[in-house]
Image (tube, rainbow, N blue to C red; front, side):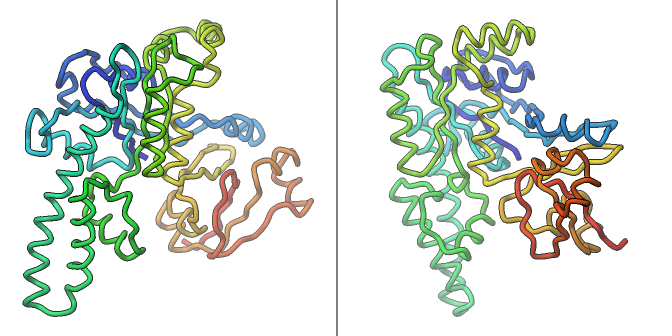
Length: 354
C-alpha cells in the first residue's frame, strides 16, 4: 500500500511525514520545500505476530509494510503547470490513496480553502485528461461503430461530473465503468483521508475547523483523521519510556502512525492474513474479498497456479489451543478450497502442486 501525503505549503505536511516515518524529510514553511518526493517505508503494527512467533519459535518476524510518499506542495494553477504542478500530479498518480493534510491550527484558519484549492487543481487535471480521451473516443464512435459506444458514454459521464467540480470518486459508476475509469489512473478517483492537523492546545477538543473538515469529508464518504503533527513529531524523537510518559500528559494513547494505518486499511478495504513456521512468522496484506488461491499468489505465483487447498485456523483459536497440532486435534483447523474468502487474522498453510 502506498499513501501519498499532500497539502498546501505551511500545513505541516512534511512534519507529519517525519513523525510517522522518522525518515528525516526536510521541514520548512515555504513553497516547494519538498521538490522531490521523500519516501518512507514503515512496518504495520500487529501485536499478533509476536505471540504467533513465540508459539512457533520462529527465527524471524516479517510484518506487512506501508509506503508513505511526501509529495511536494502545490499552488493554485498546478493543473496548468504552475509551480511544480506537473511533477506533483505525476507523483500522486502513482499512489493508492491520498492523505490530504489540512491546516486546523493558528489564527484565521480556513481549512476549506486548503481542501478546495487542492481538490480544484486535481479535478482540473483529470478534466483535461478525460477531455483529451473523449475527443478521440468521439471520433472513433462516430466513424467506427458501436464497439466504441461504451467508452464514449463512460467518458461523457466522467466529463460531466468533473465539469461540475466533482471528483470521480463521487460518481455512481457501474462495475464496468469503474474498471474503465481505474485504467485511466485518474487522481480524483483515489480514496482520500483528510488529516486535520491541530495545535497541541486543541488535543482532545472539538474545534470549528475540525468540524468543517469532517462535514466536507462526509459529503464524499471520505475519512477524517485528527492529528497534531507537532506533538507526534516531538514524540517520535523521544525514547520509548519518555514517549509513553509524554503521551499520557498530552492524552495521546495511540501513535499517529498506528491510527493512520488503521484508517488507511479501512479506506482501501485491506486485511492481513498470517503465515507461521520455525523459519518465519509473517503478515500478508490483501483486499477484503480475496479468495484463497489469489491470497496464496501473494506469497509466490507458483502457490496460486498449483493451489490445492488452504488449511485455515483463526488466530484467536490458535492462541487459545496453544499449538497448531492441538488445534487440529480439536477439529479447529479447516480445509478450504478455491472459493474460500480469506478473513483478517486467518493463520494459513497453503497446499499446492509444484
